[in-house]
Amino acid sequence: MEEKKKPMFNIIKKEPKVHGTFGTGVLSLANVSPVIIDVEAGEAFIDMGAMHARSVVEKGIKFTPNRDEVPNGKPYWLVWVTIDQAEEGAYYAGVTACEMTVDREARRGYKSLPEHVNRMDKSLKRHIIVDHMDARSKEVLASFLQQHNRDMWERSSEELKRQLQNHG
Image 1: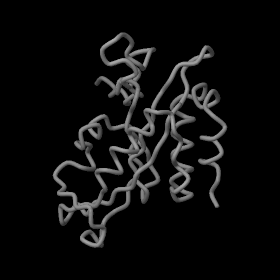
Image 2 (image 1 turned 180 degrees about the vertical axis):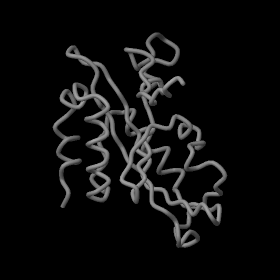
Image 3 (image 1 turned 120 degrees about the horizontal axis):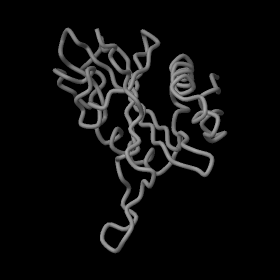
Image 4 (image 1 turned 120 degrees about the vertical axis):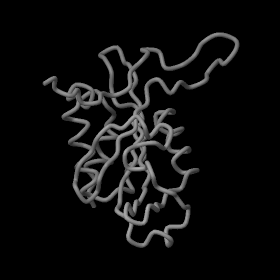
């Protein structure tokens, strides 16, 4: 049997910006990947389906922007990870997290679509917004990024490392 390949970060182009007169400065989605963190299981995985709200966690779920409508929701983080290139090589340039809860039995979930879109945009613009995550999820994300590619982690900003190691 062929071993199933683990999903890799989406790095299609070395140059993330479009150049020329039309579309100058437009950010490309080519270098962003969604990482899902299952808070209870303490696991992280890449799911490209989340780019269109079709991750394994989101499929078959009707989402509401009202947290109170999903009292038994299981917590998840959707983390937008943008990769960029430096002279030394690729690194994690933008990392932003947004929360989501899913009650699989009730087929209902909570998420703020505007927050998800805005956080993706912030990641593309090289922001680091993970300070609001719970300590365990920060540890899971830091470990996932390090294990996925230690060199990319080493080349990443001190801000990313500080926010993920600040468990207070």
